[in-house]
View 1 (cartoon, rainbow, N blue to C red):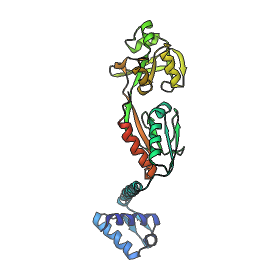
View 2 (cartoon, rainbow, N blue to C red):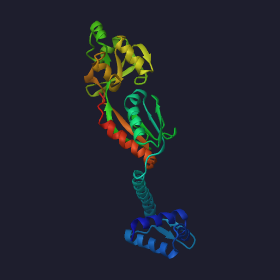
View 3 (cartoon, one colour):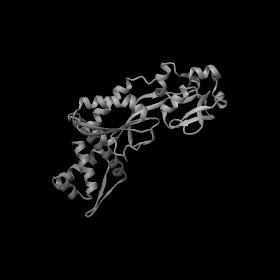
View 4 (cartoon, rainbow, N blue to C red):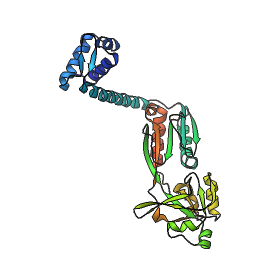
Length: 298
């Protein structure tokens, strides 16, 4: 007995509501449908359907098996679609999103390389620091920083980022180096609202996550402006590590309170489950995952 064919027949019987209509939908004979169902029930050792002259009813075992059959058949279709997609040359529209600064530094070069390799693709790159609903906004692929809450998306981890506090060397020479998060309460700070929308900054002290209220000298929703203010000595600021890695390397900023940092923030490549059937999405996801995993986010 072909088990997948038998599962398909069983699902079609339930969906059609009768063996006769199922035979028509499957373009086969009624006796074949009857024999297939009987063989499946015999093989499983349970009755899946209660049948009368007019109606069929799922048994409890049949209802459970129906859900499992649908999941298995969908997985088989996905596997076949994925293999078929690999044989196709990417072409047409590909819509991608990422946070603004991360997108400029890491995702835009990926898109440029992808377009060079696949001349039949037209890409739309949306760089946004607000939460983006990939499905509702018709996007194909995204890079998301933070914990993924939407279970309808597939997320592939590609790295992680530290939440860092930093200040300029001249600020530290003038005001001293804070030794604990509590020291920040007495210092006006620069606040990048994209990471810390409220005036509380969170730290790990021992086994506890602790919120420290800071006074704000400057608050801005633009990360470049916040970094410039921090470099100018207006006060300590909290960023994600990649945002200030260049400034730290150039000694314009210095990391503070590293031992009190919260666990790193995950970075994921995300896409709606059904989108992977597209050759465009599969090819770009493969490139993005391999490239970003090899990238060191300082």
